[in-house]
Image 1 (cartoon, helix red, strand yellow):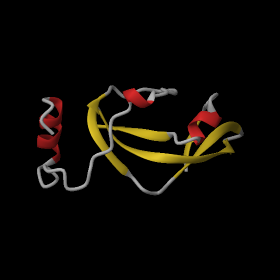
Image 2 (tube, one colour):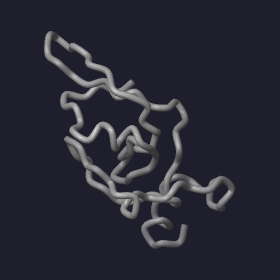
Image 3 (spheres, rainbow, N blue to C red):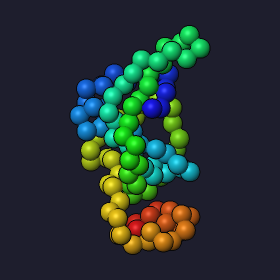
Length: 105
């Protein structure tokens, strides 16, 4: 579960196949399928617990500045999942990122 201050407004949409995308080192790099939401109190302040699947799904790297708040990705705008064994898996992460930025991986 990931705890955040704000509760999303479009919860029904998010639970219908939505994912939590992770920005790592300036790129959207992975996603986890959202399973539910839970009301949480943190220091007496209401928060939202995002319950997500434990499977981390790597996606094609896409540059993205870190952000706060919700960003809803339309299906066409979401980075595609990486296919296992696509090639480049044995390359160092910085090289994979460079090749992805060039559209070569």
